[in-house]
Image 1 (cartoon, rainbow, N blue to C red):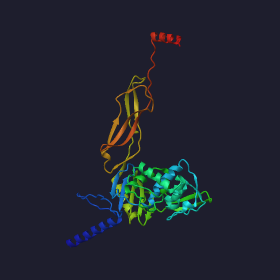
Image 2 (cartoon, rainbow, N blue to C red):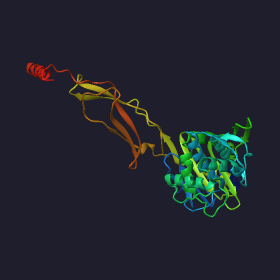
Image 3 (tube, rainbow, N blue to C red):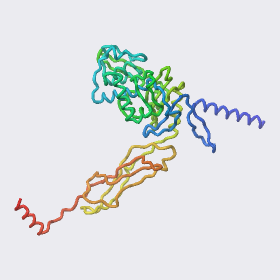
Length: 391
């Protein structure tokens, strides 16, 4: 009877283990002390990376510095440049035959169509329109070749040291390549652009044409927006040479992540596993000194002291479980010299972890303190009269 019970318990435990592995693919559970701990995700991608979108810290990598073609994820750069140009001049582009003479995926542009740069950026990001990418490149730089120069200049600015762009659409070329890490740097920069982030976060989007006067609705190719609740973007890609490529972004409780896979047969599951792993590694920490109050002596003023107040800062992201180890250092002089104006920054609070500064907030004067008005002596008054006689 005891043996039968033991066998039953073993079968139940095995069943629970199998369920866990199926429900949360890509994870290995266990540590030396028997406590639950998430292992690194197991991904199908030839190259992959997961970063903290706030500071670029690599949380997971697999051949992340290995160069590969990146297919239509290239359009992240094309759209970013187009949107940056459009922020100062969202010019109307008249589509030409040269612009639409490109193979592959399309948003259905025809010669004679007229739409803005922002609309072209939306078309290349939502439905991966090669025609939209080519049109934007020619409209901005005069040719796809000259636009590639802009792409490579921007790549250098972003520290994409192992990347070289040739085509605005991502069509295969031996000299067109990047790395998972470089593409994560690109996505990190692109998601800071409000127009870019707004477009890639939409499951479907209406795009206005100026001519013909119409609005077309397009469905986003990025299925991760529907599959993963916290997904906020970014871009899919595929060619026979590149395989399936995907750049994704996700946000949960103030933690923002970016994941990249290049040549990944199972990219949807790869990204879910990577993002789940990332959210287990990080947690947000509030930075709020608005309740801080202290009285500081004032030298040479109409008041002997003044109040100093703290301010609220933006939350920061720290490794999970390390918030208690963050060092909070108040930097404030023992006394202040008058005059001091209300709101003047007189100190700061610094938050550090393992020697790295995470955040700072200002300490400001709660009220102003003037210098006292000193009555002039008789000698000073006579000197002022004499001085004015000779002016």
